[in-house]
Length: 307
Ligand SMILES: NC(=O)C1=CN([C@@H]2O[C@H](COP(=O)(O)OP(=O)(O)OC[C@H]3O[C@@H](n4cnc5c(N)ncnc54)[C@H](OP(=O)(O)O)[C@@H]3O)[C@@H](O)[C@H]2O)C=CC1
Ligand SMILES: Cc1cn([C@H]2C[C@H](O)[C@@H](COP(=O)(O)OP(=O)(O)O[C@H]3O[C@@H](C)C(=O)[C@@H](O)[C@H]3O)O2)c(=O)[nH]c1=O
Image 1 (cartoon, rainbow, N blue to C red):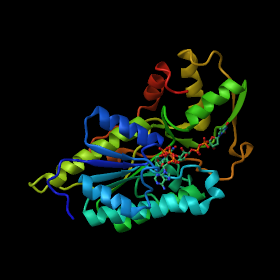
Image 2 (image 1 turned 180 degrees about the horizontal axis):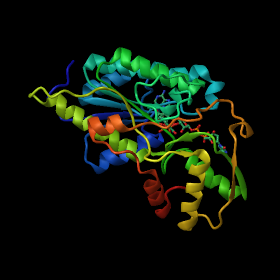
Image 3 (image 1 turned 120 degrees about the vertical axis):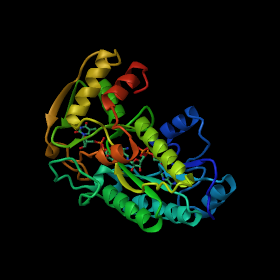
Image 4 (image 1 turned 60 degrees about the vertical axis):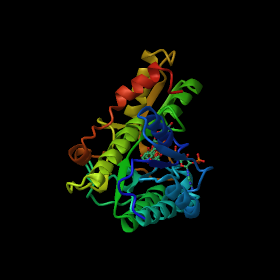
């Protein structure tokens, strides 16, 4: 069931999530032929429905933006998290393999334990701490096992104008309270979902071109890290959010933001203390630049799109 010599047609699962909606915006803006599937349209585990869509539409690659992303809730719903983060990607990988098309799957910095002191590269040892990270890692393993033509894009600390994210939580809390406590001993790289969408589409286009290239150019598959260009603590991220929001007039006054230790903010799931991702490999192989998260954030604030 090969899809060779077709025009590119991207299928996006999880289309109502924050990454899914950014993908939809970019695909429409770039005039790329695509099909968007929300959970209501098709569950990623429902291979009968998905197989028909791939065949009928001549899909040439799938981008899986569907996931279970409630990090703390996953600790009490491990079976549901497994179904969405492991079984779903496994089903998609088998489907892509049957059609001989690439699967671009999205994963997380939470596959690492956070004990590194230098940015994580793709070959570093994984060792997730919580259910979410465990299920995401098992999803990666399933994709690698079942679909040779895979891109696993690990990203981190995602924010956007859509859905739920740390930026929106902070802006909401700043309206409700004068004082907040935010952990200052966990470090990572905020990443704008719109930039992840651009990165995924660019990779899909480059793979498609290589697959069509009769000269023998090879598509590069494997695990890639993609994240923001500057590492901060959650406290640093919160300060950046508030300062920009204040400057743009979104917040009338700055809240007091206390820098606290992880122990002072107990959560059901343990998070990595350090999950900075090196983006050197994706820059080298695909020419994709890291997310300029402060710039993206400023644009969202300026356009009043961050509330
Ligand atoms: N958010 C973050 O900070 C980070 C996210 N990531 C990864 O990035 C990817 C995108 O995350 P993000 O956009 O933030 O996630 P969201 O939670 O915003 O979106 C996930 C989407 O998946 C859908 N979904 C859930 N279960 C199924 C299912 N069984 N079948 C079809 N669709 C389903 C959800 O539908 P519904 O709305 O109906 O629940 C939701 O629309 C995920 O792989 C995530 O693990 C990586 C690092 C950081
Ligand atoms: C709301 C809040 C959170 N925190 C802390 C808790 C936690 O350590 C950190 C981040 O909190 P959140 O629960 O909002 O973020 P969290 O859900 O851990 O975000 C993660 O989501 C998943 C999907 C990923 O893949 C990760 O890359 C990462 O983005 O901030 C505070 O210290 N004070 C606060 O008021």
